[in-house]
Length: 238
Ligand SMILES: Nc1ncnc2c1ncn2[C@@H]1O[C@H](COP(=O)(O)OP(=O)(O)O)[C@@H](O)[C@H]1O
Ligand SMILES: O=c1ccn([C@@H]2O[C@H](COP(=O)(O)OP(=O)(O)O)[C@@H](O)[C@H]2O)c(=O)[nH]1
Image (tube, rainbow, N blue to C red):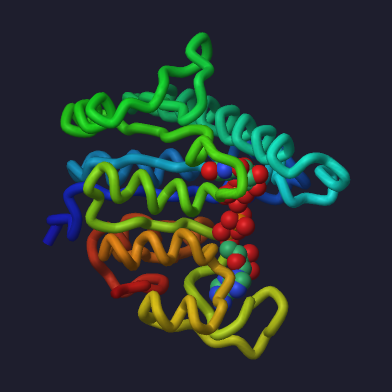
């Protein structure tokens, strides 16, 4: 009854979700709640790696980046994910969890670089690995970083924790008549241009046969239900 459905998962936390009800930045209560959710599944023995976004601090395509060189703006976005990763890892430490941050861009005085075998070792030791700086490349997103790292570490699923509670027929924020899918194939999600994740991330997961679960970051207990294999959010499958 208490056996999780997965042994190793990649959790993608949206940067914007960290804001809570604030206009930008990191909301303390929100990050603490997320960490409590993470602690709950870590205690179940699930090996957990996390990719966190940076949209709460900086987004390469945001109005604030207008007129900027896109690659430069994207590097700023990646640095924003490093800040979020440090905040998250520190909050985990305070909650008694052991976390390690690994960055896709060289910033050694601040965090260790991403080295795949090292990440695998940490996971086997039960440490929570936070992958910072996205893919390390401009023109990508942290959703794609989640698909990439998820594939690299052999995660059984990518758990995308977001502001919406699943994949809808249209953007639920813009179309109140949109309905939620219980499950949807990658091909259909791509063909229908469902924007909940970018097409690069969808395509990579599809090719690697790595399913994605999209679920609410605000709903209490949702992460645990997902990990237990309950019917929660939307499953995107091959
Ligand atoms: N078909 C869709 N189903 C669900 N959400 C969608 C869809 N199309 C667009 N969205 C939007 O995708 C976003 C996904 O959330 P999230 O990944 O947290 O945002 P971001 O990564 O941009 O911070 C939501 O804001 C939601 O309104
Ligand atoms: O591999 C990556 C990941 C992120 N980013 C930049 O970092 C920003 C923050 O990431 P994202 O928008 O994915 O964060 P989230 O939507 O989860 O808050 C992006 O807008 C990009 O500018 C990037 O250039 N390459």
